[in-house]
Structures are given as C-alpha cells and as structure tokens.
Image (cartoon, rainbow, N blue to C red; front, side, top):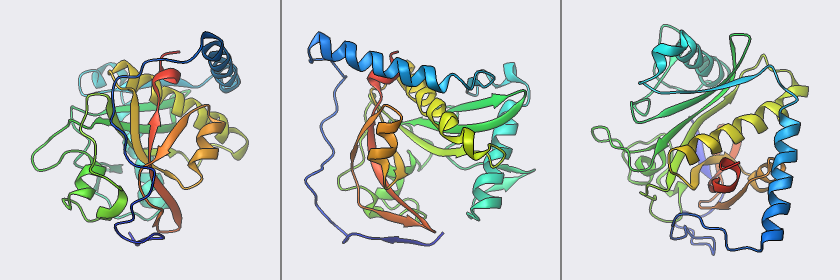
Length: 247
C-alpha cells in the first residue's frame, strides 16, 4: 500500500486531540430540540431504504445469524483486496486481520440476505498480544501499513472512545442508493458505539470529512494530517457520536 503525507511530519496544528470525557449536553433546550429534529429528518430520509436491515455481530452472537459474518468478511475481501488491491490476509474468500477479535463489533447492513455495507468497531482499550487498535498501533510503530504520523498527538485510550475501521459499501450498491446506505451505516455505527458506552469514534475518513459528515448529520475534529492511501486522500478524525447514537 503506497502511502505519503501531504503535510510535514511532526506537524503540530491547532486542532489537537481534546481531553475526552463523557458527553453532557450544556446547550439550550431549544438548540437541542432543533438538533434532534434535524437528526430525525436525516434518519427518516435514510429509512426510505426500508428493505435494508442492520445487524451488530460479535463472537457471542455470530451463531444466531447464520452465514452473515462469513458473508461480511467475503464482502470485505471483494472491496479491499479485489477492488482496491490492498495486501491483506485472506482465506476461503474472506478478508480478516488481527483486529477481528472477540473485543470487536461488526455492523452489517444487509438486504434480502445480501451484505451491502459494513464497518468494524473496536474499543481503544483493546489489547490482543502485541496489538491494541489500528491507529494506536500505527502511531506506536507496531504496524507499518499506516504511517506513525497519522495522528498529531498520542492515540487515545479511553472507555469513551471506540475506533472504526473497514468501512465498506459493496460494488453492487448502485450510485443512486449509496448516499442513503452510507448514511444508514454511519448512524448504525454511532448507535452501536453509544450502546457500548462510547461518546466518540476515531477513524480514518475521507479528507473532505467535514462536508461528508455534516451531510450525514454528524460532527468531527481532525486529529491528523492528510495522508494518501493509494489514490484516496484521507485524514484521521474524532467523531462525536453521542447525540446521533442516543436517538
């Protein structure tokens, strides 16, 4: 995977990783009501895709959902290995890595038994052998597929923060549905994180993330410089999911 940074190594911007505490609403009641109405309107628009179902998979509940987890890993293989050409572990048509552990959660969107999208969540307190979570391991030099300058500051380790990785929408989803599917996926990600006790999700997102996330009804803070993964310009961001996920 070819990588380079569009910013100087060691760049120290004014956007620093904030101290993270459980979210509490300190705004006026009117502002909260306006925000919640906006979120409901966005969710209602996404719900036009009413045949899509969301399932949160874990090691504990995989057996309740047939082949859904296997199909999600196969979809990841089609997206990240077959389409993007990433050098990732695979077997029997499935893509996986060291972060697919009992500590992780996989949010899967599926329609009529077919996987259409998914994303993986892992607590920033996770540890499995020498690995923690992807961004922290990159920052600490444990893995070399992501540059260590991906974050301005040290990677957070907090009960209130989970990491999102392996976001995908399958190639079979037509262009006129992708925005709705993407919106639904991000909202399900937020709900899953909040259900696990998180208020924030950290991850690598498209460089135009502010516009992208605002369109989805979410907010985020940049916590790293621009980095190019192959042809995709991306940036680490800390997403505030407490309001969206609590709906």
